[in-house]
Image (cartoon, rainbow, N blue to C red):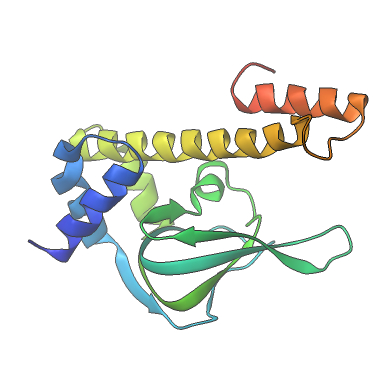
Length: 179
């Protein structure tokens, strides 16, 4: 079994997509630029233009963002297999965070040209890619909503009532219930 098939199967499982899409995703992974990152290597930097979407095939990535004082702080860790960098590819926004390799990392990199071809492709490969993007964004929104719900937990150090109401509206918006 090829490496691409193994990675495709793992990515599809992570995003709860049908395993029959495995060969289509393996084809996408084969079309990507393959990159091995060294420990500490910056894969993308906050504020820079978005040029690539990344499939994290092996390893771990630390996500860092600047706080209001401009201090870069770790906010998350991503474990393989996953996909990141897709939001900026979709809307053209600047990178919202810096992503650093933790240990050795293996990536399949989707550049802007390949991304455009995949998104526009009317064939099954394009359909699979669009479904994967939707699954990743849905998962991201659900996780964001869970993080916001933590602030509403009465057992936790909850914010005041007005802040709790605002967070509740934000959580609803993340789930598609707001404007």
